[in-house]
Image (cartoon, rainbow, N blue to C red; front, top):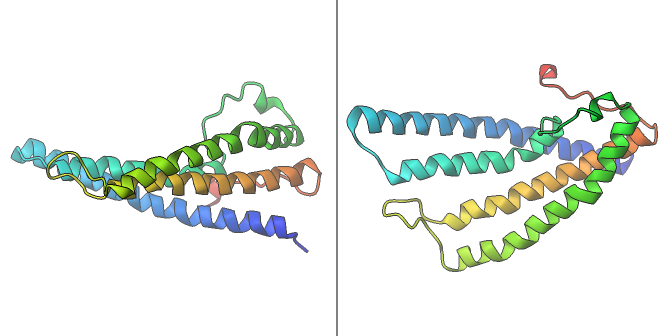
Length: 180
């Protein structure tokens, strides 16, 4: 029988999987908007602040919301000159420790410091400072909270999985892009 912690980790992983797949559609939208903006600018000598802002809004949403998915597949940037030579249990131990020493405090700091920033933006109904720009900039800023919340959840999942590997209760999950 699977423990409640392990079930929680699997549910978090499933949520991240769905969000990661949804972000692929956001990336497609970003490419199409960028392509349309380039065509309008260079072929028709037309440009709109709204489409230029939409490009970086879509990028920001994708970057923030896909961070947990990236962590799920262990695709984040890591200098693993030493790490790659370690045993699976030693990797699990170092990952587990570093999650609590660096990762969770960093996520907590970002979440706590973003709240006032977001609250102020919402209170003044901040929008683009440029004429013709996208209104409700607070909505974009709220993605910082959502993204780091999702990233923190994935950190919890990773901590549970690393703990299980460290204790010898299970082997590390093999998550690779080729599996899907």
